[in-house]
Length: 313
Image (cartoon, rainbow, N blue to C red; front, side, top):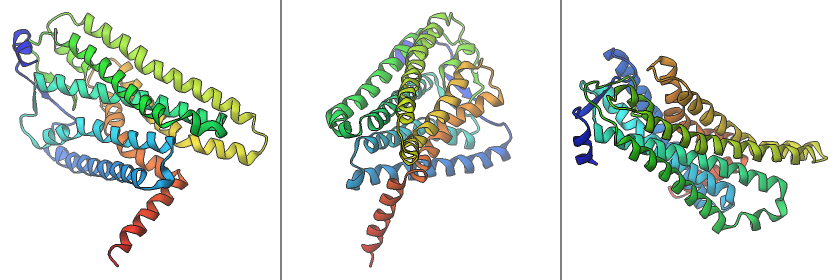
């Protein structure tokens, strides 16, 4: 990649202008985002460990939840460490190769999360519509295959986009009005035709993200029809409660992510807020969403804490 980039670009690096030029504000933002990142690591690692060690959570639903926690760790770690570094740095630079690598991993992890949320919606549909056949339908092999398929599809999508983006020329402009490298932020800096890359991004986003969103929507339409067919109010309430955490996670991810990519690239405050929401805030919130609204997860955490404390008695 390095040789190819030198052939196409006279600009060796970009400058990530970030969130503020005020050094005092940058110091406050560093403390804030460091705290958010540490909470993200703590929350997702805790959820991963709980799902792994507690036998009560060895079901497809919690298998996917563990995968989501691992994915949130990856997605957050692609963006936040560089953000923290730039908040303390005077130069705030990133090499062209490093920028394109970040573009790739942001796209890959974000795409995988989109697929995984669709898989989790299907899992909830099977659990509610066919509870007696749930374990048989959502077999270990199928669950593993759906997870591997999500990662593979997203990485293929990211690879195609970055392959086309390698042909972009960057000649003079260096300033990226953002805290992270994303393809839409690179287009204004290119001195070559961006139409091929833009078309590829548009098509892949439509097929990948909107396709997954449509699958989620269809799953919930079927879930809603199934719930409305349940005679008892308590049964309907229990069925709805099993979906509430997933619906909240979908709302956070798609609400901010789609708005970010549908907005024209301008470096506006609103654009930065949407990017922060899905790349920094959502990975921190997901463990809270799934633990605070889930009695089984809360019970498993309590069991793990009691067991841990007993080791020191």
